[in-house]
Image 1 (cartoon, one colour):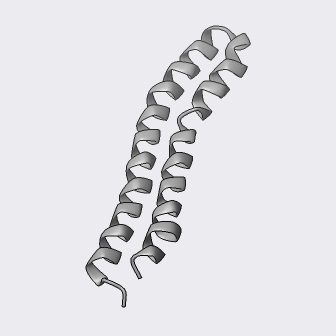
Image 2 (cartoon, rainbow, N blue to C red; image 1 turned 120 degrees about the horizontal axis):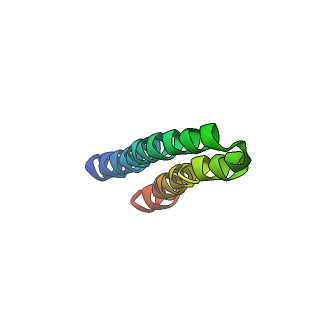
Length: 80
């Protein structure tokens, strides 16, 4: 028998992991993106670096998704 409170807490933890990392990545991209556009307006040679720096915060969301998947598919079945 599955503990409903435990299962709910694990599902809530997975949602918080994805949501918090999504918000953090959005805030990081906001700052980095505006700075990268400012630099590219001055010198177009920085396009590649600006693009790479803008994509880096998205890796945080991937880590959050991995944590959520581990919680849902490894931890949740073990409490059954």
